[in-house]
Length: 474
Image 1 (cartoon, helix red, strand yellow):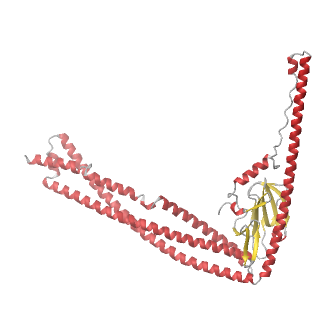
Image 2 (spheres, rainbow, N blue to C red):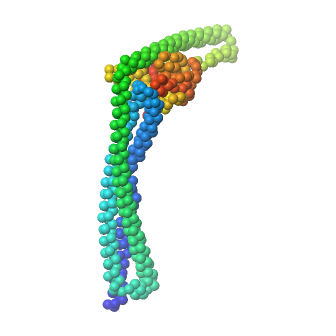
Image 3 (cartoon, rainbow, N blue to C red):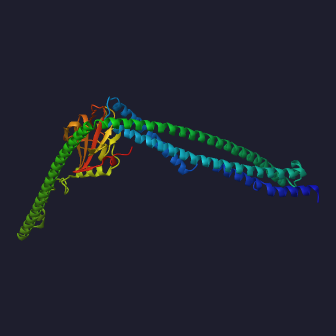
């Protein structure tokens, strides 16, 4: 067998073993697969990414709340003596500060998880790259052994015909291109490893920064608790005075309740009267319709007996359509009121806040100081001085009045729901006025202690509801 024939068979065999569709292709495929996976790794996972986004959102909201609390607390702290409003603000600030520390802990835990996944990905990347290098080295070694027998020019010109020459030339070009491509891909993986290492380093720095932030926020929390203890101590020394203030608030709340009950009972009685009137009108209308039908029947019978033509009977004029009646339900509400009440109820948990701020006193009875209890028929929302107070939904102003420490009070009807806005410095609406949601009804009052807050209540007829669950979350 000639030397050229041996070479051709050797190269043809090599063509099958090391073609771009053999070993080279396998290596290229593995590199491409790993690079594809790499671009998925930076996000760690869909769930981790969502957790990070949610955490950052909560952190931002908490910071805004703390800033708002600090601005409001600054106004109450400017007074020379401690107040219940100041104590409420400090308690809310402590709650927000605790939440801030919880979010920092969540952040540190999430960074731990992200760091572990980054390190794991780096190890896997390093291992796979080592294997790829070994495979690539073997490929180069095998190619080198084969090339030692005859050079590439001999391989090309030993082709038995021109077509075989083109095939061998194409193979050599593909092989060269694949080697270059594989080297580029390996360099790309190396760059990815460098980026991964940098990410790990940055993540460790972020984690260290979060730990330092946690230490600082714990110190702030201790300071707030000290401020709270100081205010509680001063207020406890004025227990009788505080009890008198609470009694005044209780008295004003009772006046509001009695007034609203009177308004609601009057409205219910008017509704019942409307319902009774509607029932009487309906009965009278049905009676008239029956009598008219009977009269028409008698006239038709009379005409028939006289032998009149059917055309004459047809000339009897039909009854004229009556104007559309306003429908009244069993509770005495008209269609508009029913629709409004249904729409108001459907917006539970989505109503806008009457003023920006924070809930300084929640719904129900609670201990404001040791052995000093206060009942709230709604919620108190502390805000900044001279803030506009706005209605939370479409409605009709039922009454505007004044009740001592609760200052000006506005009652708004929404079908069989009612909202109450108390502690207003001034009011710019009048009874009977129709309002749209977010329409300004007045300005918040600021008391002698520098506290600016609105008392907001929601009632369903004579049942008081917790307004906090009706307002949209903050």
